[in-house]
Image (cartoon, helix red, strand yellow):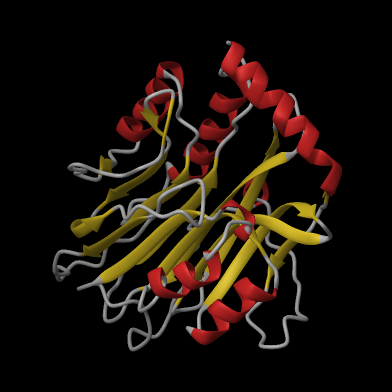
Length: 294
């Protein structure tokens, strides 16, 4: 408990540079001037009316490379160089604590990535939140916010759906930064349940990635129940370098309807989290088109 109280006091001392913002940002323009609202997940059913798309455009289901990383607001030394290298040739990138400054813009532009960010707060007048980038524009997306119980700053999640090349299904990608500073699990459970409600009607392949702040056994039990309820698999980590707090790994990737390969967790000094990098592939499609309404 002493450790948790110290962390909370430190977090409160850092909020002097922070202000909240209602904006959810979606922008792919090279001049970075376009901002549009991303719909709240409470107000939409992402897959109730399946979106049609050209089968000639989409992510390659034979290999979907993903980078997940809490980038600590890009505030540590050599962050831009590491991100430039780690994000090279990635199909999907899920970032937490992404600070939408010129350095991040530059790397995203260099890789010709489409991206969406749901903003949690302003840090030195720059938006910070979860950001999902991809080689392909998302068909649709939604976001949700829930406030930390002590510091009252929002934690965010972003759910995106992407087309697949020559495939009848879509790929759902959820990017979450979970509640951190709490003595119990009430707010933590509420956020995970909110994500589960969004996902539970979806029958296609999905990836759920993020910083789950799963630093206690109580939190681990909550996300394990979440994983089982949605029939998700955890990545087969071996000798991993994932960041640990109180002995527990806090970053996770869960998946369904996919096969993971080439899993790595490189150790870095450019963030207080180490990234997770993995490739996924999908089984061949059957003759029957699977509808999310079946």
